[in-house]
View (cartoon, rainbow, N blue to C red):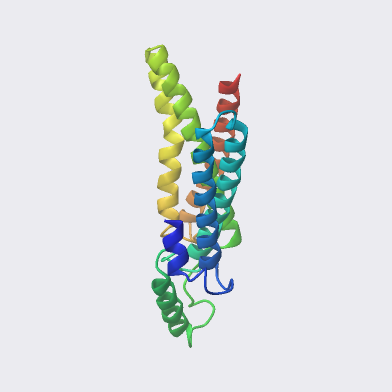
Length: 206
């Protein structure tokens, strides 16, 4: 996938000039490191080297995901897959903005909105870890308590993905009530859910 992204965005033949270029290069590099991390395991005593390769690859993938959100902010919905769609969107947006005042211009994600999107994603990942741990306990010790705990650990993942779906349409905090209060409440709830998920994860590590 990363290789095709590089071909699509001409990573091998042009200098860095866009977010799509960097996203493609990061995804390709991450894929190479992930492949190398799996290959070295064919030899003995390579667990540490494999972990290092997977860790660096994960960091590169994460950086690529962050840049993809920035592309989403700028309405480059083709991301690193469809460079032509990004170019068309940029041209269409520029044509549309001609003659518009600042108040008439279409909304886009703010920096604060991007931060909250990343918070939602991080909490969702922690919720997946917690769900896997509770599911393992349910399999080892079947009980109604472990069943309800597994369901409760899955709820943050489901809720926050619904919030991400909402923010794909509502990119800025509404100015009118009660919608403004609802969005602010969702952000506060995300922090509370995140804190409880982190605590649950730390407890499961003991």
